[in-house]
Structures are given as C-alpha cells and as structure tokens.
Amino acid sequence: MHAAMSRAWLIGAGPGDVELMTLKATRALAQADVVLVDDLVNPEVLQFARADALVVYVGKRGGHPSTPQAGIVAQMLEHLRAGRSVARLKGGDPFVFGRGGEEQEALHAAGISVDVINGITAGIAAPAAIGIPVTHRDHAQGVVFVTGHGAGSGEPDWAALVATRMTLVIYMGMRRLNEIVDALLAAGMSADTPCAAIESATRPEQRHALARLGEFADTVSRAGLGSPAIVVIGGVASLALARDAVKVGSESQRHARKTLTVGIGCRLHSSAEEIETAVRATLGSHSFDEISTIASVDLKAHETGLLEFCARHALPLKLFSREQIAAISVEDPSAATREHLGIDGVCEPCALLAAATESDAAHASISSMTPVASFAADTANARLLVRKTVHAGITVAIASTTARLACEHANNDTQEQDLP
View 1 (cartoon, helix red, strand yellow):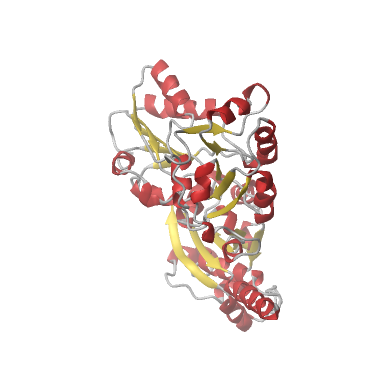
View 2 (cartoon, helix red, strand yellow):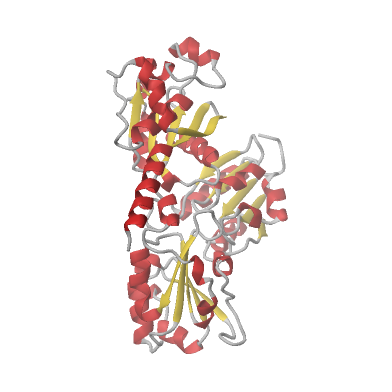
C-alpha cells in the first residue's frame, strides 16, 4: 500500500452503466488504499481503482447473504486507524437507501471526516432508461422515493403516499410487489394507474415490464423480472417506451440464461475472498447470474477456499484431469504451472472444457475415458470470452457455451416458423 494520509470517501458508483459514474468519483477511487464494494456495484468501475488497492466485497442485496452493517463500519475504522485511505463504493447514490448516512455518523463519532461523492441514483436513472420522466407537468408535480423492503412498523404509509398524487418510485419492492399493489388499491389508487418495473437498469441485461396497477404484479411475475429493480407507479409510466418491454420467452430473457463457465487456477490455501475478488474483476460487464459452472484441475477437489466460493454462490464445481487439460492449447503458457503440474495452464482449458460439457446434449460429454484426441474437438462447441487474467496469484478465464446458445436459437427459430 502507498503511504498516504488516512482519508475516507463515500462514493456513489451510479446505477450500473460504468459511464454514468462521475469524474469526481473516478478520481477519488484512484487515490484509495482500500475499496469496500457493495454487491450491486458494476465490477467495471474498479478499473478506476489503483492496481495495488485492496478490494473488499461487502455485499448488501435483498435475499442474499450480506455483511452486517456494524462489520462494514468496523472494517472502515480499522483501515483508517492504520493510516490507510478508504473508499466506500456504493451502487447509485450513497445517501439514497445506501446507508451512507449511518456510515457518515459512525465515522464522525470516531472523529473521522468523510467526503461524500454523489452518484446517479437508480430511482431516477432506471425510469429515464425507458423514457419515463419522474416528474411531468401533465402527470405529476413531484416524486416520492420509498423503500418497499420494510414490514410491520417499517411499512410505508401507502394511503398517505397515494394521497400525494405524486409519482411513486419504489426501491427494493420486487419481493413484496403483490402486497404493495394490494395496499395501493386498498388506499384508493385506481387500478388503471400506469406502472413500470425496470430490472438491471442501464446494464446490457436491462429488461422492463409495463402494466396497469390491477394487472401489474401478475405481469411482472409472468415476465420473470427480479431484483435489482425499480418500480415506478403513476401517470408518468404511461410515457415509457413500450416497444422495449419484455415478453415471456423474449430474446432478452434468453440472454439472461446461465451461459458462462469460469476456469480457475489457484495456489494452495487461496481463500474464498481472494477467489471472489479475482472472478469479479474478470467478469467485467457480466454478472454472477450468468455463470453456470466453475471449473479447475482435479487436484483442487479438496481446496477449501474454492469449495467455499462455489458453495457461497451455489455453483457446481467441475474438475478435469491433467490429461484433459494438456490436450487444450493455451495462448500464454505458464512455466510455473508446467513445472508444478506438467501442463501449460489451468484456467483457460478448464473454462473451455466446462463449456463443452454444458453445450447441447447432442455433443458427447467429456469424461476421463474420452480419448485425448477428442477433448480438443469437444471444445469447438465452446468459445473463450476472456483469456487468462491474473489477480493476486489467482488465474481466471471465462468461456461461453456457444453451441447450446446456437441450438436454443435454432429451436426458437423453428418454433417461430411453425406458428400460424
């Protein structure tokens, strides 16, 4: 780490598209010794961090394991007191449902000042991404940002919100959408009120659904939308670009399927956190939701960190023999790997081999009994998306199950031709 005066930032990374991050945020990120990253932050923004910065993932996402808030504050204080500068990187804006206010209070109580760098919040960016202005003179004189996550004493006063006649932008409301819709209808909101749900706004995988309030929850459910998503309720939703709305079985949903395989080469006793950091850094604009399989050499069958990482994300681990791996050529052979394992590399061959076994059932699966000559042939059904990248001694490569995708497209084309 660079010797530098301790400094703290609360940085908003924006809604997802890396180009929507502010210049001020990128400059601050480039100065930090330590970066504590929330789960919804696009990994691509880490390109602005220093190469030697310590990156720690402290996920905060509904329905997923999360780092306790007190633990995040404790980590920040530990690094700051050790003289390291710390950037707390959050999706959207740190002061809009990002707990930035709590973290600022905790640091101020410890005598540490904080620089707050705003980000574009998803509550504005997501509606805009599909043509919805959250305010409009003909539809709404104002907008209310509200969380749908609370229950019991934390439940919003839906009747009071309906009475405002303002646009409602709901964060973290997808899991309780049925209850929210019922509460709004019970409070007197018209069943004909236009609504929109936007998933993964500003990202390549962005999707959305539009409906009137009375059919909204069913429409969203049929479309298969989930978190992270923003819900917009009010007249302004009628201005959305309806031509881009998702349909069940649409092209955008097929792209969201698990089509990536990740090959990993790691040293003995690598931790799950180290592997997590390396994989996230390699994924770029792709997400964990697109990963079908993790793959490595069979010598890693009992590697605790690798097994823990796979369990954390409920991903299967496929293991391949050195004979299978040696049959796949790599672009950048590793002398150290050859000396240790007798093969040129691990991550690229394993990613390709795993993708081959994930491809269409018409292609034979790879097994330890498959002749060596056919290993490379089977990987013709796969495509390497990201070549070997190295992060703190862990190598990662990503392949795509292109044969399976081609088969799906062919099947869908056939089905479409059979339609009357």
